[in-house]
Length: 101
Image 1 (cartoon, helix red, strand yellow):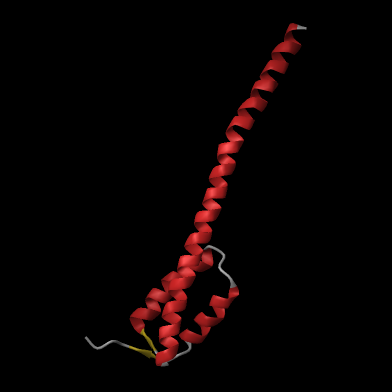
Image 2 (cartoon, one colour):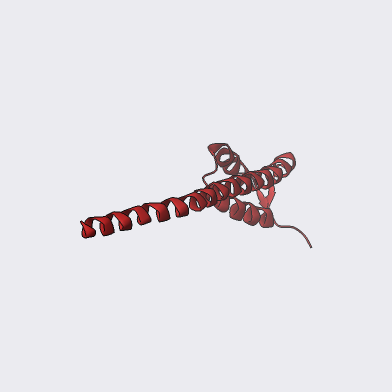
């Protein structure tokens, strides 16, 4: 009987620990999801601003292309949507020019 109560005590203690740990972990996961969504929105905004500028000009500068490529890689890794994919493909098909300093 004593062994059963020890085992039950261990099991119930483990359940209590799991519950105590799971709530903060769940909150951290939710916070991380919100931060990821925010970062994705900021990246999308930056990408679309560059795309709009480039589209108005009809060409892209090489330095813009590099910045756009880096922004897009991070956006894509955060599982951004396909709308930006189509815009990126269009912009990268435009003529590339080098800025005159």
